[in-house]
Length: 511
Image (tube, rainbow, N blue to C red; front, side, top):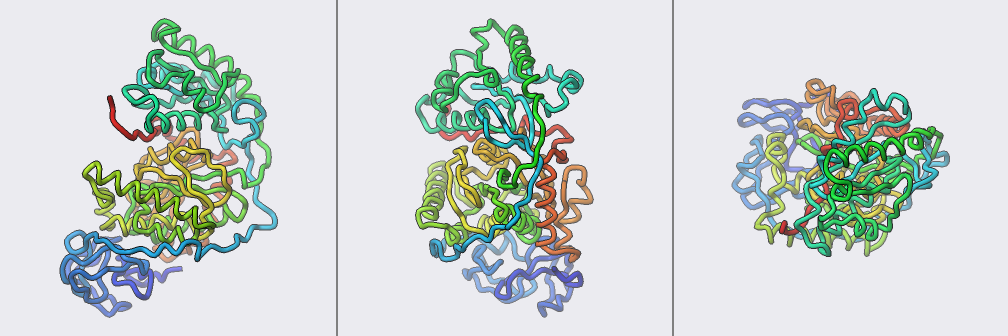
């Protein structure tokens, strides 16, 4: 637990910087550090505690977050004007920190929905939706028209159905039918079609698109059934006819979708996607470590957690490779890092294009610093496997999925891989939700919680305030995850977020 009296937060004895708890003005004496602040330092930003020569590495978390671009004096604000990226060697030390997981003797339970039929038979759901998927952008309007028919009033006869949602996207044509982009799109759509949180799925196509329904089903080993229906606009004969036909198909599914009940199931059926967005200087101090503590509890109870956003573990990947259960697992992660380095170079970008302007305003200077805070979401247990984007997550425990850092794209891949819940930390205030998986949001600081409480499910800023510990908030979050998996609505669900946040990753040329 942090000391309330201190004006700053020191994360490691060997760090070159401390973090301001509140705005510091020039002349403020930091008694704990024996330095005087020079100039204005915003909350969440860094203050140098010793002289740093130009070109020298700067450490936070006892890890390199960048290099001084000029001499930095004690008490000076450390940010974009005097801290820059630089190349340095990382010691991957594969598997050196791997250790046996201490599983609990009596795992926790939640009230889940066990699927008895359809493409997700045998899986456990945390929600009960009917989904409408578009194969191509051209069928998106029809898909939405079908879903829009099913208002709360029209679904009143089906109290066990959480809703009918349309998940549409902007691709599906103008692409190589055998290329990487198509494989990723089909893998994503297939993962949603099989997702346990969908009681039934309707797939709507145009008819002439590159992503043909038959090819999608074949690539994903899916077959039509009463709870997995498909059809196209061109075969049906236009927009209005297609919407009417789609409504009729969903109406046929609803009685079977409603015929479910929740029952106690082990926490091992919980698969949680880990996200952070609108990060700030407190993210790696409060909400991310608290989520990491909850992940450790989840893993000890037999569950699964998916860390992602490969550009946002860049520079911190060596902390994950050390936790790999086998060298090949660590090497899979390193190979994805190398792919991203080549990918960004090919697009005439660099990895440090991330952090975003909002991240920087919140105190994060380089991607190295952001990544070191981001990996804290993954807790401390072993890294058991690494997956491609939207690939089915077959392992139990802490895993990694290769995704972009853009939150909707990243979470879409996680849900396609099987995540039946998302937990999302934010320091600036992200507007996000996810269908069909409920999404919980944690604030990194109390000021955000106070301003945006209607969007935030739990305030981890209490850790920085000195009122509680990382472990205590982690335990609280774990219990909230179980309650949400049992049916309690998250704040984002109450606001209707989720359909627009379905964004499959598009890689490659648009033709």
